[in-house]
Length: 312
Image (cartoon, rainbow, N blue to C red; front, side, top):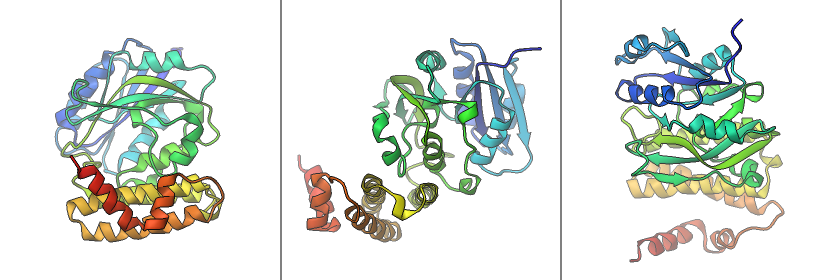
């Protein structure tokens, strides 16, 4: 009997033919060869499925779906097929450097999750990318109520600890916010400064493209509500969690103002105000910037922040 692989890489594939070959090369170039790669084609119509069909490698497992359900469902199908001790989720338009698995596996001890820094780039190139780092481990549950703590492929999880992806968020972007909040609860987490994850932003078929502000705001809001329910409801949140939810909506309020989306601006402003009030309903020290928002009001604070940002 063939022993199970060390790592299962799970990739949902839907209409990413322009980028999938590069993703495939990055997987097959890994310096650790003890992995299986499970690719679930989610009813692609652009030639992605045909490209997947042509790939030949004994470590590649192909699954073809007749109905498009979304990335959460596709990842769950791959997770159900996985046999590795560890799981890495890799989207079909991102890539990993050859030492990515080696870095993360090498840092694993008794951890349930090992995460590292990553690079964000429009072209998925390291040279023109921006380095990103995970938040401190002690701040994770407060931060992850509202924000994904790292790029989805910048972390590996023990399969026995890996939750299912939330299928109710299949139709909107930002589903990783809900997934990681669920995954990190009661998990032992190890963090390395850098990994080999390279995240491609703003591709034409990318559900997270910045020009889809309304879709993105709907998605992150739905993920945040999922997380609030998982945490036990609004009354169970910490002051820091309420503050981060305020910052989440404030971020999209600012973006909507910049992009002229009045509907998102109104919704995000109202939600930011609600969570600012919830922050001060809770005990705990608040940063001076949060006190300033309360004293000045969010609109005035935002105008002053914009003025400072735009000053040469």
